[in-house]
Image 1 (cartoon, rainbow, N blue to C red):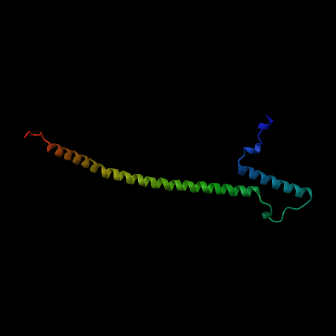
Image 2 (image 1 turned 135 degrees about the horizontal axis):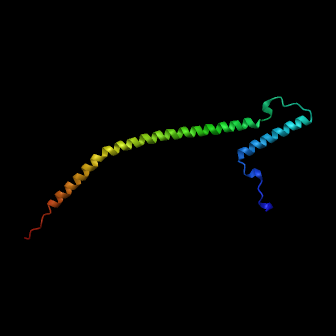
Image 3 (image 1 turned 135 degrees about the vertical axis):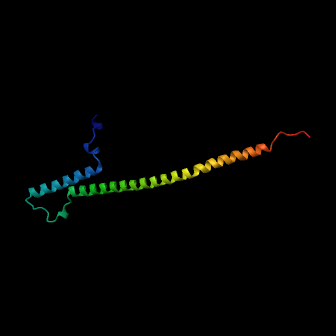
Length: 121
């Protein structure tokens, strides 16, 4: 049973694990600074803030989702336009199909008329 125990971090998605590891690293650095009486780093860029990285990732994800939704709206509009064109074509071809059927029936009657009963010679 001990072999089947799962590490709790195995079920957490990768971006959450990355966020947690960055947060842990930042916390450890700050603890080290406080233990040795050091001062915080002079520039914010010297130590990456995990919240900022996560916010950038979330912004990217939401931007991508919004772009995909806009693409779907464009596709919907294109499909709607195509459906309208098909409906017009269907309406235009309806009478022609009826006329074509009527013509085919007429041709068949003409062919059958010429085949009258055979006369014996």
